[in-house]
Image 1 (cartoon, rainbow, N blue to C red):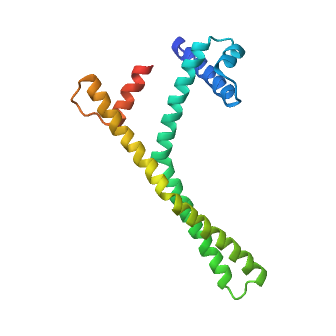
Image 2: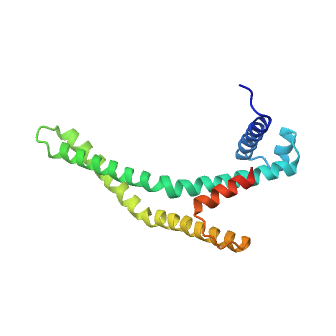
Image 3: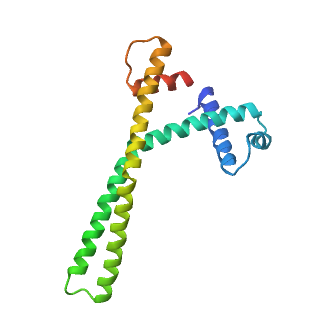
Length: 165
């Protein structure tokens, strides 16, 4: 099946941006990257702007959608470890060596939970920041367009994506 010309162009741009990101992560400047991939420095600069925007969107999605569940799963997993270690410690048939090892693992799990709970407010602040960013973005777009319709953030994101490509 033949790819359309625009699809081939998108694939080439994606490949170039992947290369630019790799070289930037290796510490090369935009000017050095431009020289290495034989593309103009302004094009590399635009690629970096797109990569920054994509990273910001990815981070916002991660903080809003992924992080809370991962945080909760970690806490549940640590609670399971504490329960299992307590059962080993309380089992009269467990060898003293195993009880000591279980107690050490239990203490580590308890410390990890305390550390995560201490970071909980930071995670909450990050989620609230993303929510505030969304609200501010929607308001700014509506004001700039003189549009009174209240779009959802998802609708605005879709409109922005369509405008970019």
